[in-house]
Image (tube, rainbow, N blue to C red; front, side, top):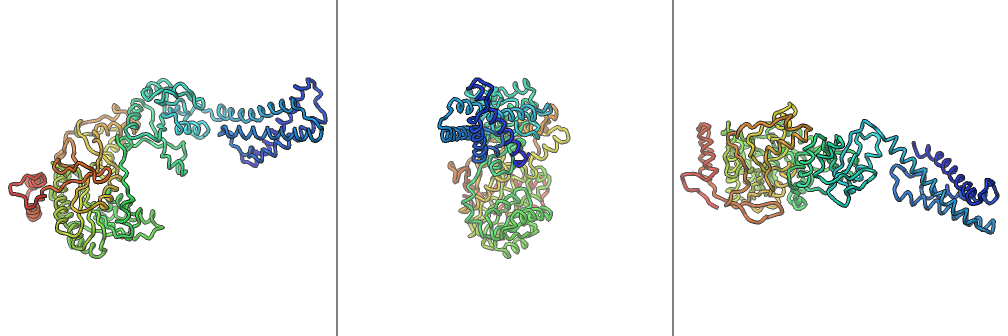
Length: 606
């Protein structure tokens, strides 16, 4: 019902209420059924007109009563009181006397009937109009301001299929109390019990201030039940109106990492990117494309998207041009192979980039075990070509994306990454370009990540395959990894290996278990099978060798490693002869070099 439609209705109802209050008050005060008199008629007219006048003045007819609170009660009190006050003034002016008993009785009845009518309407909406047996019983975790806001909205929205059945909150001062008629049932440890007791189908976590470890603890309790678990949207999305309070999102794997995502101070990097020419290799990949998105936020003059796969480069180009269409950023695409040294020199000579982010690489461990020559071509020779081209064209900063698998490598991929680090560290000593490398662990959602594989296995009904029950990995999100890379570029002095403090590692089997539960299944339904460690894999990963570690952070959540031995002569010999070596011999040679186990003395040492 619109405001214009309901206004005549409210005026009629309130007029009847005012007249009823006045005449019934006269009946009570005078103890007679003869209530019609000049005094009563005069008072009725004055109170009636005053009531409507002050109702418009205080917007009483514009209130949405299903959301009524103390503010609306104050408006009713003001309207009724001022109406009675006006009647008292008129009585004194016209009749030379004021009927205080009559006016007090009228004030009480007037207040009760006006407020009561609104209260009855709200009770009708809450108990009759909004009642639906088809709604799913919902448990709200958190009885704070966010949780009560959720319950309030669920009670008001007819189109919501959720019906709040109770709160869960660890605050003992709130337990056994009611909020909007919804009981606060107890602490987090009672979630499983209350879900069974109340036949709960849905759980909403409504505590915006939760850190990752607290959220993980709550989710583990929720995961013991068969109820679907969701979480309140981000408060900034609620405040900006992007999402309404009854649009809950599913809990994501990154919510359960057990640590807070690292938010780097990206303001400090604007001077190295804004109005500069920036080149990103591997720009179509999961990391490279996110680096491009993050860089674009700082409005570079030109952003060159270089990659080997035309479809992925086209996709990120179209995305960036649409998102940043109102800026003057010049997006340029280059389809190029890192193994083509002359093409790399040509590209960098033409565009003269200020910063190069080298994200292109082969990263799949088992595939590189079977194709070590391709890892050498793309990871090692490709990096050498890109780095040399940057040096020859006086690029200010060259940032290479490395991996935690480069530490004490047991795989071809890790070994080629470690040798690539040696290459750029050596070039830093010879060039005016500042060369740095950035190491981080597994990236959630990237191509080759276990998450997409696990999701596909769950969709097929399982089982999920995990290599070993004790295998652990460091994890971070794609935006985190990308910001670290960009931050490293702004911190570079030359020759460093930057490493993100990634907190505690995560067991892969725990990740699989959480993903199964987040998908609405049980571990028994999907199953987890152990396939055995694949060639080149380790049970755990490291981010720095012991001899590489500096004790202090160079920047919040960022370590910088020390320079270790650089086997440049041996690397050059490997590049010249690898094509003639068989796969096993090449693999062994790569691992020996990367792990500093060579017969001859190193050419250079740090």
